[in-house]
Amino acid sequence: MAPRLVPRLAPSRAMVFAAPVIAVLATIVVGALGFTLLGYDGIGAIREIFLSPLMSAYRWQDLLVKAAPLAIIAIGLSIGFRANVWNIGAEGQYVLGGLGGTAVALLTAEMTGVWILPAMILCGILGGMAYAAVPALLRTKLGVNEILSSLMLNYVAIQLLYYLMRGPWKDPMGFNFPQTILFGAAQTLPIAIPGTLVHIGVPIAAALALTVWFLLARSVMGFQIRVVGLAPNAARYGGFREKRTIWLALMAGGGFAGLAGAIEVAGPFGQMVPGFPTGYGYTAIIVAFLGRLHPIGILLAALILALTYVGGESAQTTIGLPAAAAGVFQSLMLFFLLAADILVRYRLVLGTKPVDEARPVAAVRTVAP
Image (tube, rainbow, N blue to C red; front, side):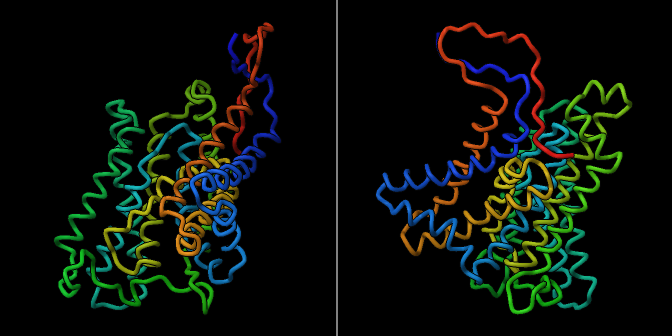
């Protein structure tokens, strides 16, 4: 008889939280071996991607700046994932948030005032929420799967960005480059730590993680989200409305992604360009699950995934790794995380020994309350 997977009666809680560590270690080992077989310096690749940024004061700054949008988007997605609402459109919502912030920056290009930056952030949040409202409406009114609708809307957002960069928002003094004008001081984020690149988006991400953790663990709203995700029938019996939870989850995911977009365009970019979509919306899905859907765990996971961006850029110049190296490590990490989760919930049975598969299996708790 072929090997088969049999549900465990009681998955180990320790292994639930050890699985991300195992996935990261497996990614490092397999990544080094794979690049070595392709003719690159595999050990050097691991050193440049995962170790060098941690030992450089300048790269630490870049690491925090790149981790902030990943953490913000992932925290928003984790709210929906807990409720079994699968928002895969964070990339498009991130782009719409950036466009919302850019619209305010362009309208206030000749103005000054402390109100401009908050207005950019607010419009970014509203832009992300408005874009997330489309799959929410399709799901609650027409029963359209939010995975497909939110995913396809990502490409619509990118095409909208390209149109604006090559048309209405193009800088007339930009030597025909498809980009907006540079933002002024009133439209850019202030620096959180003087003398560094770390802007206030970094402490905002940390504050949001603590706030969401408290709300999910100590509020009725958080209890409703957890119940709808873990036991939909019990949620309906308890009077929790599924459609309301779907709207709440998608609006939260869209708002957080839009916030990340506004922070990014007002921070590292300082203008809108066609290269604004950097895959953060997709990478944040890995961050959310690597952090076990827990806001504090997501902060740590965001730092790990930010390493692949910062270290990947460094490895391109130092040892000649291809630009796709960061994506390779991110994909490996997701693959090994999913594989580890399967082995947490199931055990591999070999041979022909009969196994009782009729007993119920306890649900795996991927997050702490």
